[in-house]
Image (cartoon, rainbow, N blue to C red; front, side, top):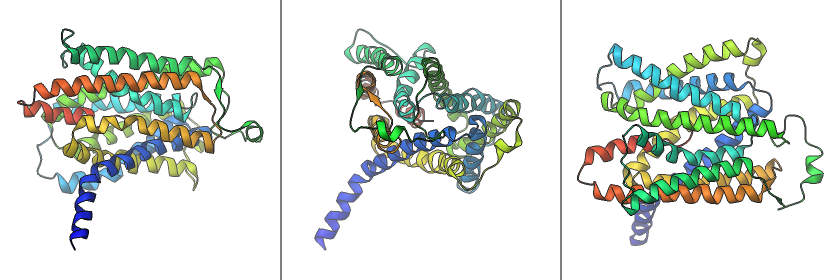
Length: 358
């Protein structure tokens, strides 16, 4: 009996760690499934429409029944939420799925690590985040931001010799046209890299703007569902303007349906709130520390399943990117320790840092 009680206590203490491992596997799956669907011919704008539609349907019951007694919604606030959805969710997701067509799933997972850094930079420019270069934590945040962005650029533009885990040559010769792993021209790769960084910048801006919206409308589930609904409408208009072929909108029992349902229901719905639960238990820095794990998982699966070639230049970029991320997180953690007497600021910070992936 004592052994069983001790085991249950151990499992209880390790729940946040298990949750974060599960979340990073889900995020890795998002990059892999998205890349597979786009590479197999699905229009990226149509993909966003269906993803947001699935997310809205998945979140709607919880928004209606779990937060029925929350603050009322004014017309002015509704317009703000619509605009934030436009510049954040709609813009960033459409750019993300356009970019993943010109890059790899590993690159998408790697550049997601720049979101906390870009969020810090945007917040600092908007004077929502303080920077003190006279103190070590402030220096760590600035230095980490520069190193992280340098790593992202190095990953994108510096290749170097390939890392030969196995001899993929014979396998790659038999790849079909829709296989996710393929050779990209320099122009395509640069185009995709810049679009991906733009998508992450738009996502970071959305995270910053979320802070002020949540203050006015604290019903988080309903707010998320409402933004997904607005984003679905906006993305539909975008997709109709870009894709007039009706056959592109058809979903069959294939990887297209699996990908959009996975990204909409699992990623946007279930994983988001599991991450919020973990943040409330362990704090935002704890969750952010696990972010590079999704990159490792994605790189391993891409190399073995899709024969994707890794390069030493990319590895160097990842080292700089992750090192810069941890530097920013360390500086942020030290500064938060000095501001523990302001619980409201810490609560808002949980909201700002809970969504670090598209």
